[in-house]
Each structure stands twice: as C-alpha cells, then as structure tokens.
Length: 246
Image (cartoon, rainbow, N blue to C red):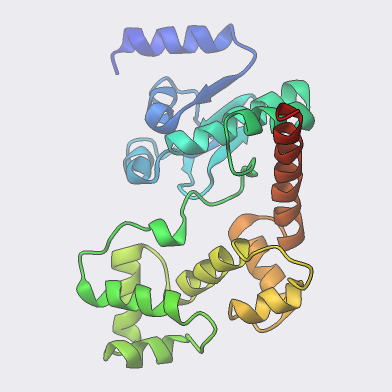
C-alpha cells in the first residue's frame, strides 16, 4: 500500500476510539504499522502471507476474531459478524447483542476464541486417500480412531499418515479426529436424556472429562456454556415468533 495511504490509515486510527479490520483488511492495518507487536488474525488463506510480510506481528489464523487493546482483527466475512456482535456487546451489553444476533438470524454469538475452521467444511483435499479417510472418520466417530488404526485403514505407515494430514489438512490425525467429535457433539439434539455422559459416548469421547477438555481446547468453552448460548438465543427467538403471531 502506498505510503500516503498508510499515513491516512494511521491518521484515522489516531482519531478513532476503536479500530477493527474485516477479513484481509488486517493487511491494511499491518501495512500502516498498527499491528506491530500485537497478535492478530485474518482469513486463513492469507495468514501465511501476513506473517511473512510482517514478522513483527503474531499472526494466529485460528480464532474468528482477536482483540488487542482497542484494535480488533477478524477472520472471514461471516466471522466478522461475530466481531461486530462483540463490539455491540461491549458498548451496549450482552442482551442487546443477542437481540441483534436474532435479527440477523445468526445461529449464536460465538466467543472470540472459537476456531474459524469447521470440520465438515474443510477444503476438499487433492488426495483421494485423505478424502476417503475424512469420510471414514466422520462415519465412525464412536470407534477407535488412533493413528495406528487410521494408518492401517489407509494402508500407509503411521509416519506417512501424519505427514499426509499435515500437508493436506494442516493438522494432525488426532487433532482432526477430536475436532470432528467436538463438531458432532455440538449438533447433538437437545432432549431430556441428552446428558454430557450420553453425548460423550455418542461422539466417541468415552468420558465426560474427555469431552469437556476437548471443548476447552477446540472452542475455549465448555459443552454446557456452548449449549447455554444456543438455548438463550433459541428461547428468545421463540418468544419473538410467539409475540409476532399474536
């Protein structure tokens, strides 16, 4: 970006109470020097470029948005809706933020630490073998899915399997399996007997403690907190629909 444009961004930032970027807009803030020494995110597809061009920035491609003081950076366009709701919550409170989320027909207001990756929506792999493995994992989440088990299923060595996952999906086999189980657990139907123990068993975690630890690692929250966010939003939405029908 031209030096004149960088100067304008810095001048506008100096006059603003808060600065935020949407998706690859983080590159503009970086070029203006506003992210130096800070942790920031951007769309996952350009995170490597941002880190290479600005080594003074701690680039984290996983969260949907990051706040560093009065500077906020968001991931993709949909993730920046969550960033916007966080700004609404900061200025006007959580209740209004949830009302805005309902108006936008958003599933829930996600916390900043949540990953911008969703297992079923991972980019399609260029390798047929890894694609078959991904579907095998999603079809068999309640089974043993250790590295040796997956390597045997794919007819490759454990070392080769790990290398394939890292190259194709940017993660390890164990991390991918855990993410897939967390995703499944989040979409378990709500019912009176849907206890954490039952969900843990149905999704392959085995124990309640394992389920909770996985949620904390992947989402920065607990299953109960995650479900409560949805329940709060859904309950309020139902009330709005009822009121509208009167």
